[in-house]
Image (tube, helix red, strand yellow):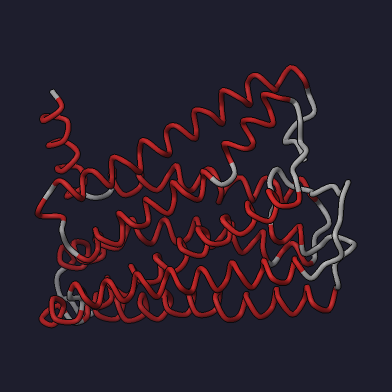
Length: 295
């Protein structure tokens, strides 16, 4: 489905989404370069942040380049194999974002609630294990969706009510089995969604409890400021993703799903580097060092 059938808007949409894509890739690459080039940022928090930036680049690359090509060629046809590939890659990196946000919440929990044991708990081996677990969980999520869709009767000339092969839309196709679709949606929603959200909620419950025990207001603000960027991204990501994934079972409005999908596939990956760079003093200093080296 095209975002607009107005022919006069197509050049504007082409330039708009090309700009979004370039800004997202450049912004996240700058975060990765800043973290890798500054020795002071070689910590677990920034290790996971740089991997989140890689995941954001891959996430937006699964949808926007294809959308730009479709706008340029005025064609919205996608092959069966390409559609399944796009869906699999999209789920992989969207789930990767979710898992990394959960791991980053755990990192902040350990740093604030157990500061004396932080370096012992979040050692390099533990960080590598958490990253590997995030990748494996994302692969499982992606392949479960893929295997279920492969069980459907082969379909052609089918309209997908979104600007990309959204898994929630594929599972809503008429040729799909409704019972199987509901099993997949609820299983994935409970296992991955509940695991991630409960992990984040528990971490912030413990973080807020620890912060409230700090006597000075300045101490409370300074401690909580280390979580501000992460909390902003979590609210943006989970708010829009939940609205699309769960709301797709009860809403038949393709326009609302497309707008919400646009938020977490394009806008959030673009905003993440701005949120982390504007609200994080260490990233600002690292970016300034990069700028001085370039000059």
